[in-house]
Each structure stands twice: as structure tokens, then as C-alpha cells.
Length: 77
Image (cartoon, rainbow, N blue to C red; front, top):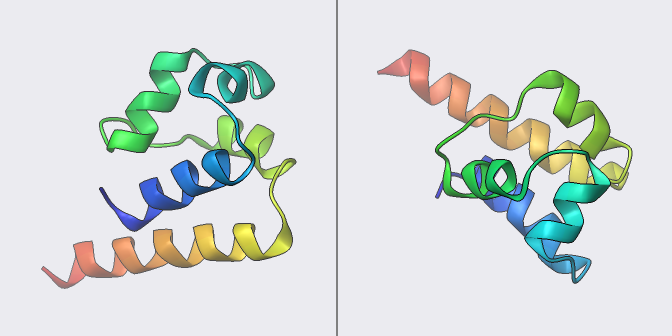
């Protein structure tokens, strides 16, 4: 699991939300949430916008930092 996927899953778990409940809050299928958390699918900007409304400032910063680290590592290969 990547750091980005960890941030997504940690956010959900820290609030005691099931995959189904969280998916409903951000208007996606439970399968989409599972795909994000497993790394099978990337979070797109529209869906991140919905999720961002539920994140604290620290969670947003952690998410963007992890994405930036992944992008940097991808280009250094």
C-alpha cells in the first residue's frame, strides 16, 4: 500500500467509518473506495474535492505531501 492509500484509509478509519458509509458521504461506490485503499485506482480531482471537504488541514497536508513524494520517486527512476 502506498503512502497516499494509507492516508485515505487512515482518514476513514480514524472516523470509525465503514467503506460503505464513507463511499456514501463522497458519492462513490464502496468498490471505488476499496480500489483507492488498495492502490488499484488513483483518486481523481473531482472525488478528491469531495473528500477534501471532510479532511482537516493536517490531513490535507499529509495527503499532498505523500502524493508529491510518490511523483518525485516516479520521475527519479
